Image 1 (tube, one colour):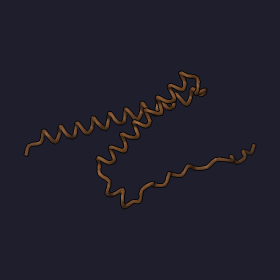
Image 2 (spheres, helix red, strand yellow):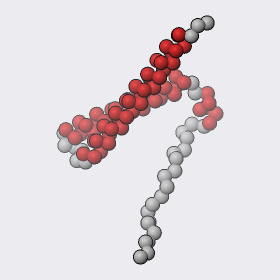
Image 3 (cartoon, rainbow, N blue to C red):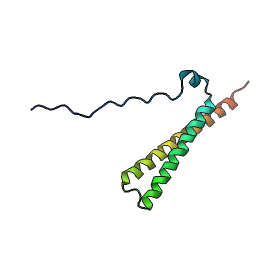
Image 4 (cartoon, helix red, strand yellow):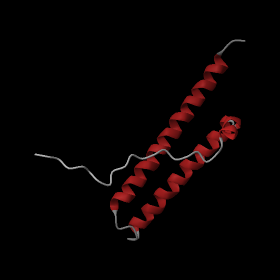
Length: 98
């Protein structure tokens, strides 16, 4: 039995960086954290939009709403874990004796 080649399959390529490498090295941690939080807020807004669309019967595919809800939940959990690590690091620094 011979198996034919699968057509239409391609390996996804990583998206090109939107900023040149020189400007990325100048970004501060607060800039990175601000962009990450903005991304979480955008993900949550997209989840709410699909959730309302599901309630109003404008979104016919329940999978889209479920995926958006899971993405928002994962983004929020990641944000909470980062916050917990930052607070833990701050408390550890405050415990250090000078």
